[in-house]
Each structure stands twice: as structure tokens, then as C-alpha cells.
Length: 255
Image 1 (tube, rainbow, N blue to C red):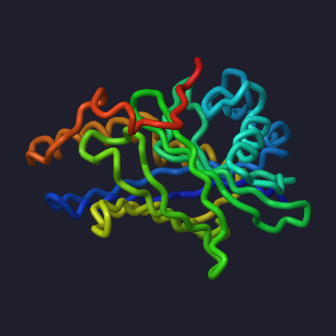
Image 2: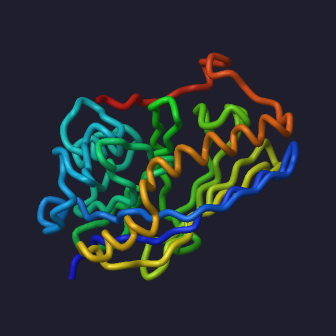
């Protein structure tokens, strides 16, 4: 049985201040064991080559080039992580017909006995930029948890000096990822990604592709639509060029 699978997901964003705003939409994501991606036997999925769905190394943060695994290991070392993972599983949406956009992708890292070590969350924006955050295991619970400075331009309606509070566990039959935004002690935004597991087969992938057609285009369209609604509500916004010193550790996609 493959560790790779699909998750049929619900995404929810609830803005708490300065004005309330909420939206919900449905998508699906891939959960890919990097040791399996070249041998999945799905004719409409491939790695680093054109296909209906394609996982490309260049769509994730890069430190000196190489594979997704190579860059992740280099990043973990740069962050002071000493035990390198033996297995890596990636929650993401590969390119669809050559187009990619991922608000978040999550790398789950395991030792040789399949015990969780740490995780890395890659947050993306609509400018073709992304930033990785190490989210370790919480020593007091079975969750991955960290509260970290954002210092990344994700949305014009969120300040750069917010903090992300990441909380999630390892995906099993169900997926549950929570990301809250904090301005000091005040929680300003609640984001959740929840889902149910499906086997990664050609049949299930075709079914979800028909149920959620052009899912990547749907995500980027909804992001711009919700941004318009926030602008219409006169929620204060921030320019991309403002405060460049608060936009750190950012990578750009390489085509």
C-alpha cells in the first residue's frame, strides 16, 4: 500500500479584525512520499516533465538547486536541525496543465523507523514568492506547533509584522491544519485546512479532477475575489513595496 494519497479538503478563512470576514471553499491536495513519486504508475502524473499533473523541483524553495529533497535537507541544516529525515512526505498541489500556485505546502519529515521528526511549511503568495517555516514537534503534545514571525508579504490586508501560529498533526484518515495570525496578543485571522483521505489511483484522481475542475485556477481566482471583497469593505491594506526589511527569507519561483 502506498503512503502517497489524496485529500479532499475544505479551506476556511475567518478574519476577526479590523472587520469580520469569512469564506469557505473546497479543493483537493496530493500527499506525496518523495520516495514514491517516480513510481506511482499514474499516467496523468509525472515529475519534472509536462503532464496533466506534474511535480517540479523548481516550484519549491531552492538552496543551490537540486531536487526537492536536497533543498529541504540544506534548509533544515541551515536552521540548526541536526537529525536529517530518512523519509519525506509532501502535502501540495502539483502543477496542473503547467500552472502552479500553492498558498501552503507542508513537508513532513520522518526518521528511518517512520517516527516524525519535524515539518516545514512553505507559504506562497501571488507574486511567485514563497517562504519556508520550520514547525517542530511540540514536546508537550503530539502536534507540530510553532509561533513564528511572518515577515512575508502574503496578503495586502495583513501586516508584515504579524506572527503565524501553526498547529497540526500528521495526516492520517483525516487532515487538519490550523494557522492563526496574531498581532501581539490579539488573534486577527483564523485559517483551517481539513480533509479526508482518498487512495491515490487514476480513478480517484480523475474523479476529484472532475468534481473540482481546474482546481489551481479556482484557488487563485477565489483569492483575488476575496481580496476585492476586503477592499470593498475598506479594510486597510499594505503595499508590496512597503517595509522591505520585513520581507526576509523569501524565495522566488524559477521557471
